[in-house]
Image (tube, rainbow, N blue to C red):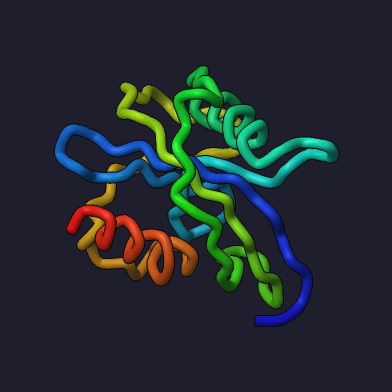
Length: 134
């Protein structure tokens, strides 16, 4: 890993079947969790709440988020960059149409083919979530 580091927050939503919500941002081909970059002075949890509101038009409360962990990987859509993500989980909520820069929503099984998942999800967060379930 090399180049600049991108710091983000992300949120895991699981549906009743145990699948997780992934999103694909406009102009990209990799799916990731809802979330995004921190704004100046923002905490990880504040960024998670704001980004979910912007991308999914869902209002979540910081008190309803549970920290899963912090993970670092190659960035999916920015060559020569790494991404460090603070990942939270929130209880299932119905999700409507995507908002902001989100082009597509998809509920993804943890064991599904990871060919179009961001490296952070495929190599770090999905394995952590699978380990958590066992």
